[in-house]
Image (tube, rainbow, N blue to C red):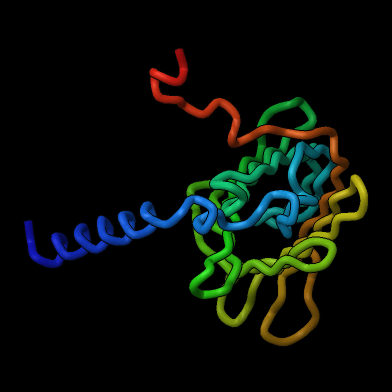
Length: 192
């Protein structure tokens, strides 16, 4: 095994060991009742519409499920869009987390074989996150939550000129979810 790889593996073991020796309460990232994204937790359904990469307009039934894991240190999101015939036409997955060392939020997003990590900013009533969208341009997603309504837009923001809205969704909260923490695998001695 080359020395560089050995050094990386040893570093990972030392970091993991250091984390494991901290008291459990100190490792807890964010307490769930005070979680800054708790307004998102649950199951949601509604409509989404916009303009696709092919420049054709679309309208789908959109569902989202959002829940915490790792004692609130990570928020997991799955979005599914369904066409008029009930076929799955869109599926995305994201992980939102806070890095204590950098004191920054980030979102790791996956869809259609693409993935990336991007800046994420919680606001008083929602969040904003953005991705690169070509030279000197970005896609910006802004969400607002009011009661049981989740409203979000996506905008193409060029280097100069006005932002152009390309996406809009309005969802209603339809219930709680115990996803993704439900169904954990327990050691056989505890499970029996």
